[in-house]
Image 1 (cartoon, rainbow, N blue to C red):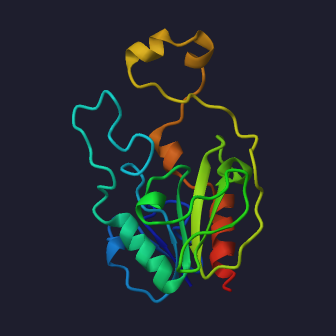
Image 2: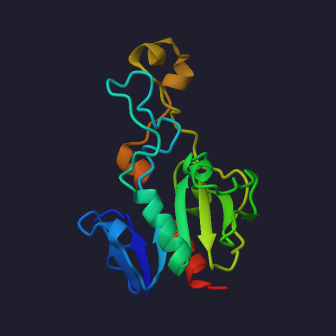
Length: 201
């Protein structure tokens, strides 16, 4: 059995044999074992726009996620497993986890025998490249598709309507992902994480 923490209701981990999904209704911060975990803690307050962006009406606080990442980190270090977060997540520096190599491969991450890597979900079913950092404890270092994927280049986002209007037409015309598309874990990527967590050291 593997427990999937902070996952979407009806998402890729639900109704899957051998997976115990903890959706929003089951506060994943309260998980106390005993199974190994795949954790997808919320990333809004850890990513590039943790403050809400330049046009935000309310300034946010870095790392203000109600303890979700800390709970996921405790679960992974206690029971074994993996945390998935966007590339350049500020949680890595905050919690003293070594940043992975952008080109791929596993990096020794901390004193807990954790390992970190950067992998693009575009290799595993995501439409965009979607570079992702993984932090794993107690998992055999699985070989993955490293380096740039062939995911389509989507709209990189603009901070305001004025910035979008000032951009070249070729930039404005790019397709945009919805929030749901950005947050969804592709099936092949979930399969990869399940294999990773299932391959205990």
